[in-house]
Amino acid sequence: MQERPKYYFPQLDAIRGLDFFLVFLLHAYHPNFTSGFFGSMFKYFYDNLALTIDVFFILSSFLLTWLGINEYKATGSFSFINYFVRRALRIWPLYFLLMLLTYTLVPYFSAALNIPVTLPPAIYYLLFISNYYLEGHVYFLRFLWSLSVEEQFYIIWGICLVFFQKRLAYCAGIFAVVSIIFTIYTINNNIYNFFHTLTYLFDFAAGIIAAVAMQQGYKVVEFFKRISIWQDALFFLSAPLLYVIIFCLIYISPPAFALFLDLFARYMFIIYMGLVIIEQMVNERTILKLGSQKLLVYTGKISYGLYCFHGYTLTFGLVIFAKLDISMPLIFRILIFFIINFIIAAISYQVIEKPFLKLKNKLRRV
Image (tube, rainbow, N blue to C red; front, top):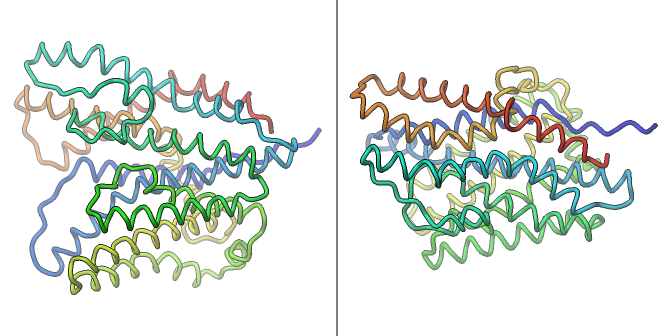
């Protein structure tokens, strides 16, 4: 009997776990920065924590592509229906439970507590197109826009995995080019693009290329297999160093040019994270042994629940604190909210998500 290919990588869960810590920090903590060079630098680095969302997209496309290639190798085909059902089993149960609770209970509690709440038309969330609903609405739902981007990508990429198995790298190249052209167009025409799926096709492309590189043994994979400890250290230091250099250029540049420098930095970060995935997958002597960090790995395992619930935790936590007139230092409040969110997500993982994950894994063809 042929052994199933390995499909679980704790080091990737650790990246996802670390990523969520940064996402939570970005959404829970809003510091005031001083003026001047260093204040502007700290603000620039803080604002770029938004790139943590991009990491989720990169990881997602990497794993989907890795599994899709393995399925094709083992069976000679790729089942779109099987693929989509497995994706639905991972995303839909918790997501639609939250939608049910939001649109039935939130209006009731809003009226009872005399707190105005603006809920968007449910159709945007039910059809996973909430990333195109840009009007102001309740805070805790806004974070779920990224799930709409993911679902839209799942459909596009599922079709590619069916028809273009021999041309996946070319598909990724097309995604990247379309994303760059679209993003530059929106910047030139002052069009808001943060939530648009086309903006993130570059992210998905990076994950795809990383998976194809791993499967086909690109030279970059061989490089990371043989990399020395000193080279590895330089690799991990290169990203913050690059960002410092780019910030310095942005600081002295006119606004129009600064926008494109910032875009360049974003693309460099996305490519870099694709390389980090490869490094963590193949470098047995890595100085960043993420796969052995149990807390990060577990955080990554429950990160879907952590992400889905954290908007609710922050929103209702602030409401409860205000109603009870609870005052405490910001750092303690953030820590309490994080612990509560972690407990809720851990329970969700065991009670709601895990049964569907077991079913999802049974449906895998390889």
